[in-house]
Length: 116
Image 1 (cartoon, rainbow, N blue to C red):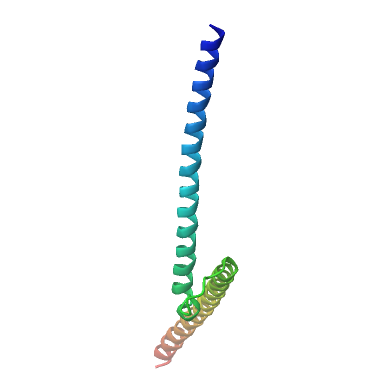
Image 2: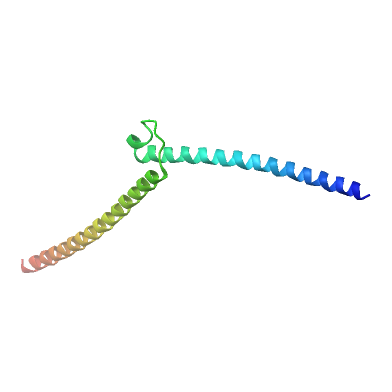
């Protein structure tokens, strides 16, 4: 009976080991695929950001290059937003001045008409 229990336990362990091996192979395959997808993504990002630097020489794009390019684009975007805000303020100020000038013109026209 003890021998049969050992055989059953060994059989169960062997099955678990086979399952673990199968899972390990799947995980390795998934990891390799994820690495390939990351490399492809980095290259595509660099092609969009900077076509001349994006693997046109056949070189692999480094993560640091991608990070630097994304950071550069982010900085440029921030500067663009700040410039847009500045221009909006300037436009608002000029519109206010223009309204004031038109109001003064109306007052002047009314005064002129009263004088006539």
